[in-house]
Image 1 (tube, rainbow, N blue to C red):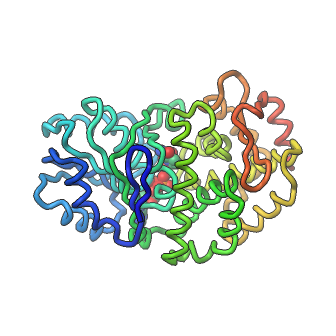
Image 2 (image 1 turned 45 degrees about the vertical axis):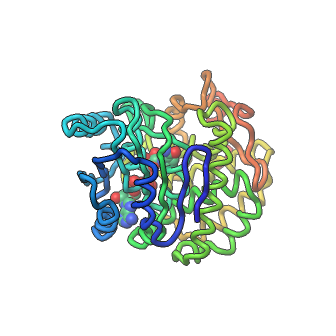
Image 3 (image 1 turned 90 degrees about the horizontal axis):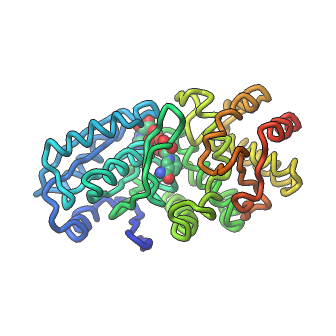
Length: 360
Ligand SMILES: NC(=O)c1ccc[n+]([C@@H]2O[C@H](COP(=O)([O-])OP(=O)(O)OC[C@H]3O[C@@H](n4cnc5c(N)ncnc54)[C@H](O)[C@@H]3O)[C@@H](O)[C@H]2O)c1
């Protein structure tokens, strides 16, 4: 299955990696060298398949162990120096094969290398397939916060091969599911109902339901990102739950104990509760969300839902990219399938603290 986005296509399927050979020839006709930036945790067989689809090119492979700590400008510089020392030019190609961390780093490297080298993204986590590979955001963290250094840069192609998700731990699958759920919550009630019925099938990687949930998620994300590529307004709706998520991640020093998708699950729950307290959303929706979370068996996460934990993370919200003044700009939920407009709900630190106290 192929989705034609404005600037590139997205190929989704079982064993869709097979299309890499013909697509590379078509999209990068002058390419001679390929640099694969990949992840140590990806099964070797998959990298083998990629290489066998790229016979005839000079291929270089770097495997890294992804973490928010290595998602930084030093790693970018390291790869830029490699590409320069190997005499890569713009008509050559960088391929990112990994989760959101590899995708964000390799996309950023591609955007700044000689002002833009061909880039193909092959996301290998559910989160990266349904979210981070779409919309052209690339970047790295700084000591001041997450994803604060980056660019908007589209890949020439995205290949979503659901076969690679088989080696993904359940914890990572749930993180991907979090972003799928977010897309349904902010945009599509019918899709939300589909998810409620099919959660277990999706998490068991049942091909048909899995591909449908990825396809739908990609289309929703494209709807926002294609209308507002540079995130001036509309696209910010995709940040539902993320203001709290990023703050919790920062407060916990980007520890592996709380990864991004888990923080998003918590963030969406907090944002929904605040929506209820602000009387823009019914408490039944919050309760419905709790039911879904219980189905996911993620009770271990609820420890983060304490007054102390949330209140002490507020100070990390100041650097959020949605803010354009001293206030904290939140996306709230109005009903299933509809989120508030960016800028509609801005809170001072004190107001937010008092709302959070009322949550408990
Ligand atoms: N650019 C965007 O629009 C955007 C959107 C959302 C998130 N992000 C970023 O994405 C990152 C999170 O992405 P992620 O959740 O994919 O994390 P990740 O890249 O750290 O991958 C999660 C874990 O899964 C492992 N892994 C990857 N593929 C695997 C496979 N097929 N089998 C087994 N293990 C595998 C990785 O080694 C890692 O341990 C964050 O840095 C976040 O900021 C970016």
